[in-house]
Length: 262
Length: 299
Image (cartoon, rainbow over the protein chains, first blue to last red):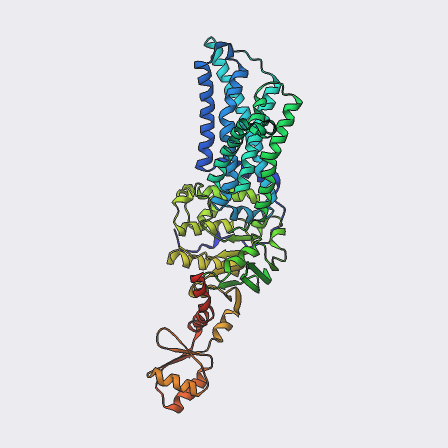
């Protein structure tokens, strides 16, 4: 470190023009922020490893008849369906628990733009992850075919779109919980526990059983892993998503917009 | 250029900031002085649009901060050097800011170098940074967008004497080239060395503000006598009230001429008689704000 003041290394004081920060640029920044910390990077690495692990399990232990692309893909979606939302939670909460909100919202005072950029980044990473799962599933299928498994390449298009929609839905749900609670450990625990508790209540208390069919997001989204969802099944997903994604997201956005930053 | 007009922030019944007004002109360094809890940081957060004022307004270059399209290119802000993700490297933090502002990321190594952080330090995670290094990184972040205005909250915290000297030079030079600097501190001496203007705040209110030279000139005369008790009596007889300094002198809000005559008439031996300067300002600073910092300690 030097105490010598060097004229030529100092910035010029000038009059810049202020163009608003574009949403595309912000989304790229938010995507980068998902992976530039140790926590984020390791989450992504673990998701990749776990997905490769699902293919290995499939090859090692599944019936030969089930060793086809649809089987590999369906199983490959599981790790990221659980772990990718955690990345979404951290994207929202780290701004507060690591206090980076101070810098983020100083550079972009329009907080809603940052939130939209985060949601877009989360959607993009969910799509990218689904594509990556497809690649890993294909590699697994290729290997399985060589090792005497079914190795069939037929996969219903609806399964791919539904899988992708489910990934996006869960990442957005994670982000909604993050925005609502603004606290990493609390948001992660409640994200995982609350739907589970609701699921248990719904299945044990008979009076809740009907409501549970519409409101338990773990139940309604189970249909998304089977090809050819019906309109009724989509409606159930929509209703449960309104409760578990839209509602916390709306309250969370209001909270982030109003919150004092210090 | 920063303009603050009647800013007030109320939390419940407590006025954290009460009717604060001041301006910072281009080409000057404004020292924002006050004890801890006086409302400096709250005022600065309101200027930067991070906290909504209860009443009043603040503009930077004539525009409310929240309406600046790309504020990073107009105002460099350092409010808390520790508010960075501990798992990111210094270089990554600057890269993210550069991407946000739309600046070429190739300028990042130079920005780190400018504040005395080398490539090795840039690759290290902020978790491993000392407070001084975090302040340097924060300053690099503030300067990154080549802004015309700097808003810095206690930037000298954690810097070693060499670092403080370096920062003064940097800020002085920045202001001399037409930049506007608002710099807060709870240490008078630290700000005095670089500021052109001072705004003193205590208990949420501005208690003094103006040109540094003027403020220093107004602070009275320091007098020290061989017999301190006799001096106090002489002053009392002359209708003057002095404030005692820690080293046995008395600061009196009048000219040396008046005190000199009074002492001569009383046959008092004076050991020292001179303009109080910063010693007087410090005295004033302590007197004006003492009650509030005690309150803060209890709160």
